[in-house]
Image 1: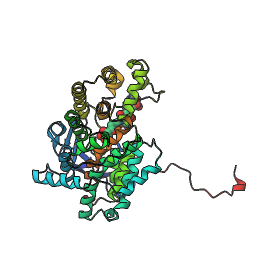
Image 2 (image 1 turned 60 degrees about the horizontal axis):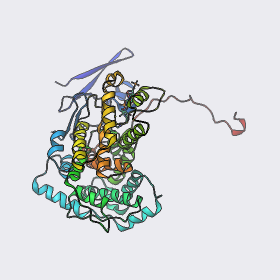
Image 3 (image 1 turned 90 degrees about the horizontal axis):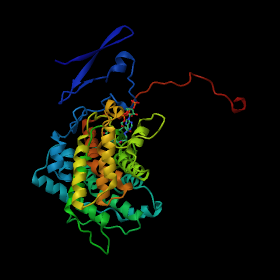
Image 4 (image 1 turned 30 degrees about the vertical axis):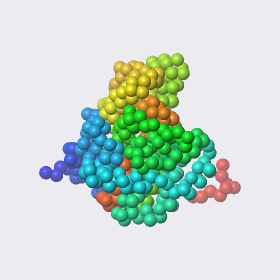
Length: 428
Ligand code: SDX
């Protein structure tokens, strides 16, 4: 039975169709609302607006559930490899051994970037933030591969997907090496995806970086946990840019720019900066919890709260456990981890946070592991982007395959009524 929603406007009743998804989520389909009623909806920040029907990721914010193509994140993070999960998100199913081998070998084949791209680094300021570099370099890839312009050419898009998966880690590591004045380290395709990234980040021409399996496993888990998260800010940006039939490189570049914000992926860098600030201020956690509650104080607890999760972010649970494991196995005692745990304990007992259902999110603990791995704070959001890449690609591909129309929201005008031009001699 197809349900309907009834709306009464100025005494007139309208019926709108409803849509129910495969997890029983219900939506009022307002596709014809303006034609029917002359009205549009208003929903600042799209807190109540579904922008897409998607089969990729399912979130239940109340229950703290996260599924990639139906598989729970707990199992995926425990047993999966990042490229296996990337394949699952992009193509819809876990790959067979043969499919994973082809995907892995194809990506290995494309890990080098065009030598001319190194010249860009000569123009960036030495301490350019790597997110600004990465976003620009990914957009520039569209100029090196002009054949990637047509989003409906399956063969070209497939090659573009593999090039993006292969080259983004190389570009990310290059941005880091250049920022510290080290020579760029080329990929070694005998390594796995995560091992290659660690090699490019930490090896030197004079020194072969020995890959610690504990670090490699932690990186694999972190990339998996960040791989997709339905219609978040950066993914919605990727879909919006792609909806104009802009190429995949430009759409991903826009997603990187959106992720950079401290309210989104930039939070992992902001969390560590916040924890360091609390530590340097004497470690008075309660003082900063009070600041976060004070409406006159712009300070917020970074890594806390979420638009969708009104329960624990399941990724935060997994990362918190991994945090303890990695630091114990590496024999590292990081004082900011102690502060993070104190902060979590104090905040989760405070009515302000309990009433607003503000829990630690994916960004709260991830930076502590990145730090333990030896990744500098400014590279934390780049790590988030490396993890989120397959999710962005999967969502962009789904949007193209669905034949979605160009995104173009409406508005309600609140400006001046019609008025005549005033010559400058007659103005105020
Ligand atoms: C990510 O969307 C995704 O899926 C994102 C992500 C992904 O995987 O793509 O999960 C990744 O971006 C995680 C979030 C990382 N950001 C942060 O950690 C920054 C700190 N968090 C907040 O800025 C905030 O919680 C947001 C942005 C995450 C969510 O904001 P909302 O949903 O718009 O909620 P809101 O700002 O309307 O807050 C509701 C209330 C407000 O108080 P009242 O006006 O009701 O009195 O909660 C308060 C807010 O002031 N609040 C906080 C707070 N977060 C919300 N107060 C103090 N500290 C915080 N962190």
